[in-house]
Each structure stands twice: as C-alpha cells, then as structure tokens.
Image (cartoon, rainbow, N blue to C red; front, side):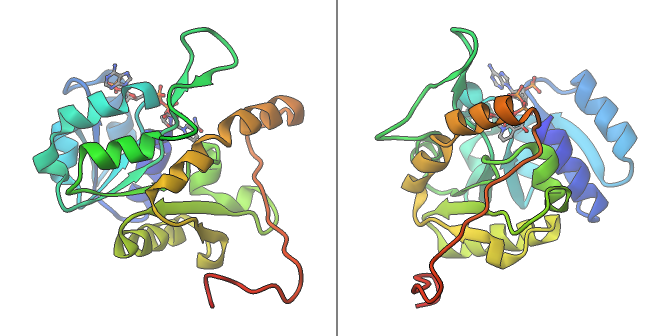
Length: 217
Ligand SMILES: NC(=O)c1ccc[n+]([C@@H]2O[C@H](COP(=O)([O-])OP(=O)(O)OC[C@H]3O[C@@H](n4cnc5c(N)ncnc54)[C@H](OP(=O)(O)O)[C@@H]3O)[C@@H](O)[C@H]2O)c1
C-alpha cells in the first residue's frame, strides 16, 4: 500500500521507479507497474535497490531488516534510504505493539546494519495517502526527518517538497536516534485513527510567539 502510493507519486513526478518484492514477478507489483506505465518496473528487492539512486523502505517493519538484507548492502551503500516503516507487531492481535522501542528503533537498527547507507527516517507518522498528497488534510501540519547525514536529510526534504510538503513543514528532529520518538508516536496515531474514524489526519505544531527557532538560530 505504502510502496504503491510512493512509487505512483514518483512516477507521476517523472522519476523512474523499480518496485522490489521478495520474488521477481510479484503479482501485485506487476499489476502496479502495468497501471503506472512508463517509468515503472518491478524486480526483487536487490533489483530495486541496485536500480535506485534513492531507496524507500516501505516494507513491514518486523521484516524490514530481512528485506534490506535481501536488497544487499552493496546495492544500498552510499545511497539515501528513506525509511518509512514502523516496527508494528501484529502477532498478538490488535492493537499492535512495537517490536523495538524506548532505547532503540527500527531506523537505528537499519542504520547500524547498513553503516555505508544514509538512513533518513521520514513520513512514518502519516497515512500513505497523506504522505504523497499532504493538501488533502487542511492546515500547517508537519512531518519529521531524522538521520545522521545532513546532506541526506536535505535530499529527503527536497523529495518531500516534490510530494507537496513545504520545507518549513518538514521538521528536522536530529540524528537517527530520533526515530525512536516518531516510531513511538504510532500508538497515539492508532488511537487517534480509531477515535476520529479516518486515516487522513495529521498533527500541527504551535509555538509561543517570539520563541527562538533552534533550527534557524
Ligand atoms: N499504511 C500506511 O499508510 C502507513 C503509514 C506509515 C507507515 N507505514 C509503514 O509502512 C510499511 C509498509 O506498510 P504497507 O501496509 O504498505 O505494507 P506491509 O504489508 O506492512 O508490508 C509489505 C511489504 O513488506 C514485505 N514483507 C512482508 N513480509 C516480509 C518478510 N517476511 N520478508 C521480507 N519482506 C517482507 C512485502 O514483500 P512482498 O512484496 O514480497 O510481499 C512488501 O514489500 C510498514 O512498515 C508500515 O508500518 C504504513
């Protein structure tokens, strides 16, 4: 669902996209590519990672390390990897729990497993329709980026701009350890979804007038 939303948006923006799956010829991926048209192709996780200048991890969080290992560290080395996944564990039913939290996060685990890759955690705090069309939710609502490499975060922020997120609504939370906080937002996100009865919402931040903007200071 997330991979398709992001891949379709990228194709619409005239990027070439290869959708990876565990096995080449994945029925759902092939159907997506046929519908998305020129610029869309499919393959294994390794094919996709080798093809992309930028890689999006849109895999089930509990399986992301397996998927990225299949993608291969050589195919990921030196690249920006935008990690959209949440480590949701549905094995005990609903609501899901987090398979990693408090003192670690999926984003950090990915960065540790692939030290030559520039991991930027982003977009995991909004539904995939909102990821690629923020204007469907009114207001100055925000998304977050975090990661160890400032240039990678700049590149991710530029891509988010293409998706429709103005730079001032992309908040830099610092290094990749901040992935803990955006992943641990998920229980609240799920609660809000249940109470609001929609997937299409987001959070907006308000600050005291005249407060120092640490990002500009
Ligand atoms: N739904 C949203 O709007 C939303 C919003 C924010 C974040 N997220 C996060 O985005 C990610 C994707 O969510 P989704 O609902 O689109 O998809 P999903 O069902 O959570 O994951 C599907 C993807 O995970 C891969 N996968 C599943 N089990 C695997 C395994 N054992 N080994 C290797 N790869 C495996 C699948 O590969 P195959 O193609 O081979 O099956 C497919 O690429 C999740 O981490 C989710 O928490 C979702």
